[in-house]
Amino acid sequence: MPHILIVEDETIIRSALRRLLERNQYQVSEAGSVQEAQERYSIPSFDLIVSDLRLPGAPGTELIKLAEGTPVLIMTSYASLRSAVDSMKMGAVDYIAKPFDHDEMLQAVARILRDRQEAKSAPAPTTATTTRGNAAEKAVDNANGEIGIIGSCAAMQELYSKIRKVAPTDSNVLVQGESGTGKELVARALHNLSRRAKAPLISVNCAAIPETLIESELFGHEKGAFTGASAGRAGLVEAADGGTLFLDEIGELPLEAQARLLRVLQEGEIRRVGSVQSQKVDVRLIAATHRDLKTLAKTGQFREDLYYRLHVIALKLPALRERGNDVIEIAQAFLVRQYTRMGREPLRFAHDAEQAIRHYPWPGNVRELENAIERAVILCEGAEISADLLGIDIELDDLDDEDFGLPATAGQSAGNSHEPTEDLSLEDYFQHFVLEHQDHMTETELARKLGISRKCLWERRQRLGIPRRKSGVTSGP
Image 1 (cartoon, rainbow, N blue to C red):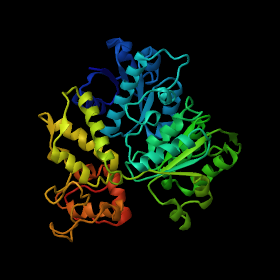
Image 2: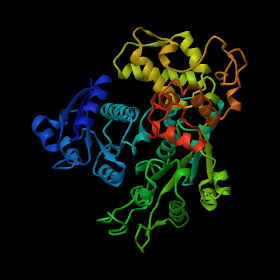
Image 3: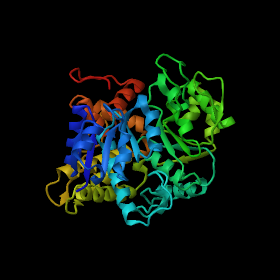
Image 4: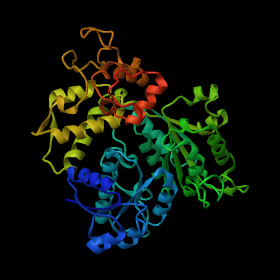
């Protein structure tokens, strides 16, 4: 059982994180500061250290030196994301931005521990590299080798071929696909197969950083550039110098920031907020979005010149419901990963569970599938997972193995034929699902079923104009 040390001065966060890790079969110790951790434990004896960046006394980065090779995962708020990148340069294996959700933390922990185990069994490298930097040299446990993405349908095979062709170049890439389809996995594969693999891959979710901070976070700022700017600070574009910058949800980037980004692409230089001087940067840009940037450009919501700069190479990730038997292949891989991580005997899907997995439209895509299987493994008491343990809303009685329909809409009776998923967009399905279930489900339950966060659910409600009918549920993120 891996032994993890949590160093966090906020008792509520520390206790919640401890419970989360212990529920997932990890042994956990904790401390409120670097000094307390030193006094109570032999720090190098742990398998992983998860530490807040800002602590009373010494910062969390001090643990990197004390750990003597034990990986250190740094937690930080979005307001100090720049400092987290600095901590990676000091030797932290990765960072995770607060507030994080449980799945995000568990995935990060599992990945780091797996990488550490692989590193122990592999020949010693000649130079020190980061987790992201040496990922290209590691074997992955699926049939697509260095690509690192599960699935073998025709659309994915075509995608793998394009990734292998595009990765060695420095061309900008636009990755398109619905939320939860794995756009960051594509970005990571492009980076790992490029000449920049040993340089940083800096990932930024443009929708997660407040609009007032986005320019400062991306491009840096000078002292006094705005209220609270007590010192100059480099931006994330600078942090990616020599490597790859991955901008997820680039459609959410404000127009002012788009203009600055265009300068990076055209001139290869940046100018910090409040500065009159420019500096050169060598960055490859990979952008991702679930929105139609061409339409946004026509309506003035996205710069047309930036769109064409980004659209040099476009890679389209199909929705999970469009990938045929891949859904079972991916589900089996997730099942093995989950029961192995939880230290359980091998589990299998019952026939009704496989049928449900095949027929359900998965509006939250691969992310929703992974969440459903993790839930099922936790709740399963025998050796077989039944359909009800998946927690998805689908009627199996009217389905056969060749029917890939959706549940009946509010205006259809249960006996009516189902609409084919190809004719129903994610936004249509989202609207149908919310309107049908919001009277008997909380916002948290709705978000969980859709495989998205409550904040994302709230934002989509606003965008699509879907009113909330149930007055007793808390609104907003």
